[in-house]
Length: 249
Image (cartoon, rainbow, N blue to C red; front, side, top):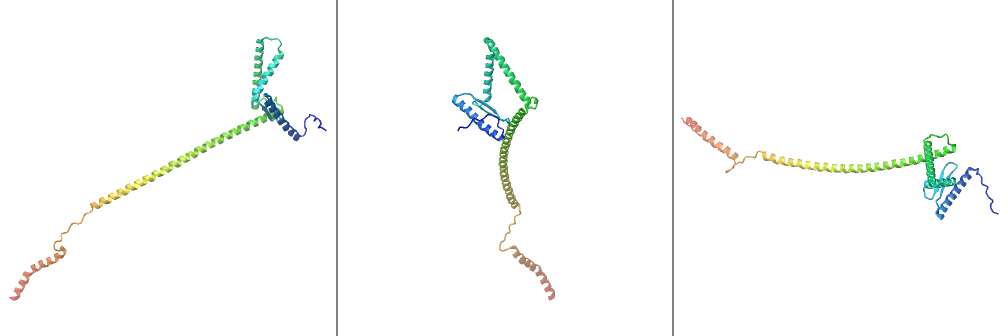
């Protein structure tokens, strides 16, 4: 026996409802993709879950273009239905009027959304609309925080690179300074040693030199006592002679 037709009604069990939604949503998006590929058609699918979460699919990866085309065709069809026997000028004028009305309505919608995003003009919203608005704000806030964290990480990475480069430059400069100080110390040491050597040679040149001594036939110290003794004998000889004469008398 074949399976009977399932009666379409709201599924009361939350888990079963969520599972069915996920399966049928994936099937719907798959079918939309298949028809767009097989038939070369422009397809746009928009699905909101009961929690307000958005699921979409578009062939041009730009939902806005397809929606704008839909609005143009829908307004044009409405205009053609309401017009029976109008001239070309009236048709063009009507098209411009429809375009103006469409743009005016779009501007009013954008302005109302902006006020609602700012927390204003919320009286006309239902609980579900407020939940959807809150979900959109949470998503936008997450994207903003993610972008802010990305920028902060990039800034920190750039600062770390600059700090590393500055440290390497400081190390190189410090190495050059040490080498310069070492070379200057060696130069000063060489200059000091040269000055010391020059001072020693000058002082040795200024010291008094010993006088030369002439020694002919012997030293002066050896001849001096002998000469003194001879002089003494010559002096005392008359005295001895005088004394001896006295004793003889």
